[in-house]
Image (tube, rainbow, N blue to C red; front, side, top):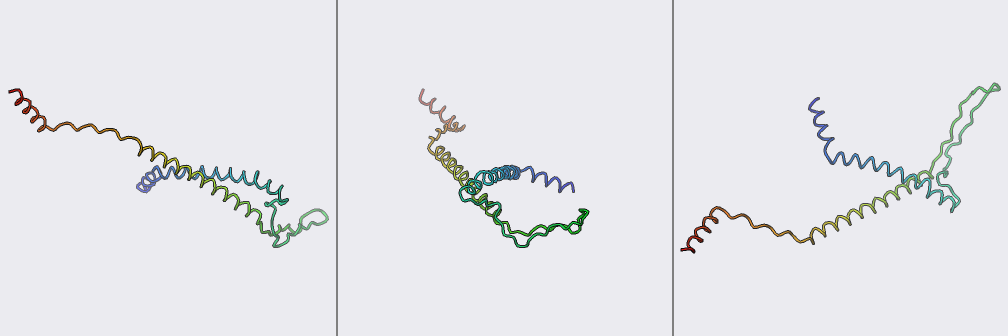
Length: 152
């Protein structure tokens, strides 16, 4: 059990797992923002222009039954809610998805462009001249011998 916990700790603390967790959390928050934009800004505009509120669009598959009460007000039979097919909510979710997909496409495209520009700048930057390697012991000795021979 101790080995299992140690392995799990090593796995969970890897950089890519932590990065992924952060991405999921930010993605969830981003999804809420986009849902608010769609539900609170875009869909009301569509409803105002088209005269239809998409969140209210539904087809009733089975009618509901109201509660039956006796004369004293006690409930004899409980109410049954209608069974509906809420295709308006589906339309709103599709619009949410499209907006999220477009936003992510734009973000990924911008990141790719910045990455390409960075690589291009790195390639264009002149390479620093490499320093000559230090002479080996043999070269030093040969240079000293040459210098001694010149002086004679």
